[in-house]
Length: 174
Image (cartoon, rainbow, N blue to C red; front, side):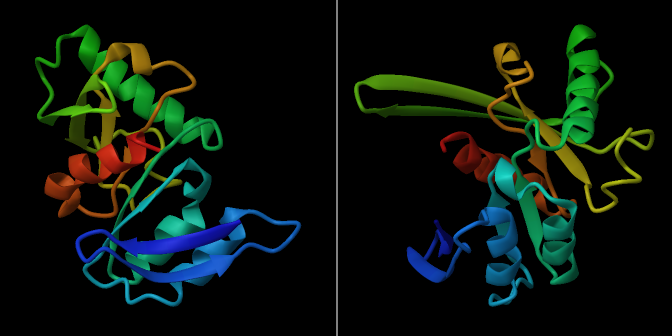
């Protein structure tokens, strides 16, 4: 496997690192991040890269990140799911959030997606273990909230509240 860093707006690869024969992306991602100036960047990583050390490296380098969260981080996943499910049961009436919708027409189908993004609450269950998390998001389709959710978002700072939904879309398309 090869892990690549891609500059989306410029359409160029910034670097790549091959994984060791008996390893995976988790060990290659920090090496690749070490080759890049992270200051002012928004890094998106799939669920395999949802590791505390990777998020800490990005934030320490002055960047922000959007990370898909799945079963490899069950406590964080459960905290995000519980937060949004609780608010959805109350029709989001007491939650300050941002909402984003996309409509893609291609490959013979129409894909409609929606996302919620909110600041991490003061009593967020995973705040101690993930202190860099400032905002969390979830797909708007309640059918995606099961244990095999398509994507969850973790951001490094509040500055990504605007860029977050766009980057989450990139993660959900994998």
